[in-house]
Image (cartoon, rainbow, N blue to C red; front, side):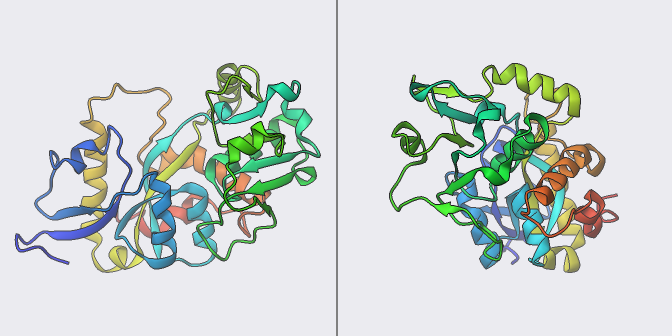
Length: 294
């Protein structure tokens, strides 16, 4: 939809970060396009609107949700623009009042995760299986939300309505939780020293886990490639002009090759966890925009 000023107006969902702040407060603008922002808090509450109802032209999107969307031919295309990445080890917790616990103690336990396809949960389950030998099939997975992609198979047990994931942990109804933190003194980290474990994991894998990237509608790619190029340019400029010090390793990489290591490892995990029916390659993910963004 064009504005009276001639700019292409794009329905947009992006979280508020240092690298998106200038786009949201209109400090950074374009002669060609204008972002019409819709706000969700947290931002992932809007992802199903994109996946199920095509509510946006431009949308932040969880990495695993995008891979599941590929499997079911949802009409959106991934841009090599990371919005949010972090080491995941701090987000695995247990109730120390019930005794000490290590990753290897999860076998046969009841473990809570917000939804079966959450990207943080997928990263942590992949790490637990591949680096700590946890038998994920022996774990009873308790979830609180359905997947953003409705077609995804979900064999988890759904928590009773109205139950809180951390409160269930404190009440002894869960043995551990993935994807959450808590200031309650009873809550300890499953990895003991999560920062040290994350540093060791990085030395072995040379990857910063990416949670969210940006997608655009397939129609936009097919009919308005110049608009897509301008979206990517603005996102990149938002990052480079944010004033944030350069990080090494970079948790929000831009570019296909820069995103390749983390996305390929997540694709391997997603297939291993049976969240997607095949092991997608990074080249498959970016094929629709490779030439467009060259």
